[in-house]
Amino acid sequence: MTTRTTAVSPHLLKRDQLATDGGNPLSVAPMMDRTDRHFRYLMRQITRHTLLYTEMVTTAAILNGDRHKLLGFSEVEKPLALQIGGDDPREAAECARIAQDWGYDEINLNVGCPSSRVQNGNFGVCLMAEPERVARAVEAMQKVVDLPVTVKHRIGFDDRDRYEDLADFVRIVSEAGCQRFTVHARKAWLEGLSPKENRNVPPLRYHDVHRLKQAFPHLFIEINGGFKSLEQAQEQLNFVDAVMIGRAAYDNPYIFATADSKIYGEEGISLSRHAVVEAMLPYIEEWVAKGVKLNAITRHMLHMFTGQPGTKAWKRYLSENAHLPSANSEVVRTALAKVPQPSVFAQAQIEVA
Image (cartoon, rainbow, N blue to C red; front, side, top):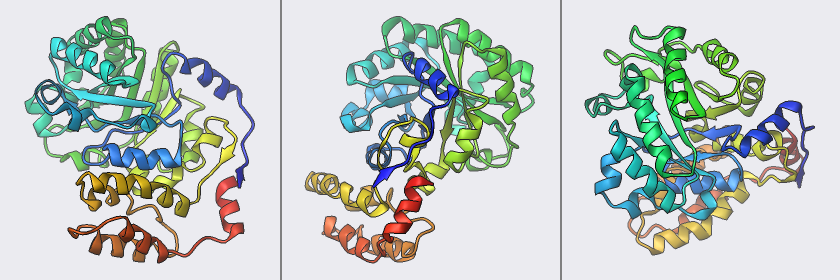
């Protein structure tokens, strides 16, 4: 069935103009142990245009590790950004050069992760205390690549969380050439909260991000934190240039089923949940034949039927069988058969929602 599209708004036209400079109005957040190539391939069956990110990869890993394992991706995953973590401008520049050679569309510097491991490496959110160092890293990367160099950060950390501190950080880094900032609208506590708690406990301060866009209208400002639906994303696009969705994208990936029509104004066919799973089968067969365990792929598919009849049976069968040594695509087919097909009317309602 053809998805009904919404009228193209003035804001959408503005975003289309910005897109020539590397802007994209919607993205799925980089998430450790989540946004690997298999999850990204799944997301690309649901939305063609949403910007996807890798998991964060440290500069040391890129320079010294198995690049095929760390950086490999399928062309279908594009547009795709590589997120790196590190504090050394020379290493960051070399990683940017490598990212460009591998064909990534963007390189993003992590200045938002609050984990103790990241702090020990002197990168992540603690770098917000050193905007000049971040600026040097951005400048070094931009000197050696043509692709956009962007920064993802928090509104602050610990007691360094005034709006004025945030604005100073963005000003200094933008003067080094960064034009796109993704702002997680929460502060981070470096002591006392786990990374998981830092994603939920500090209150959301969307207004500070909106103020940032007003203060820097020439910059591309993306907001992140707490969004669970495309409707919420569309509302935010009245105030900022882009929205990044994190955990909700993983816990219910099908919320992106109408992204290409609602956000990008593209007419086309919205695949049903069943069709998305079926589209994954050749990919699964290819990777299982290469020796990849089935559950390395299906763990990302467990939430495909969130909120739908049959979701428990789907999850249970995959959880009990996908880890077995002989597991292959037939496990997925059997699990899929346990989920009722939506009626024609119900699918039509999904497509125009």
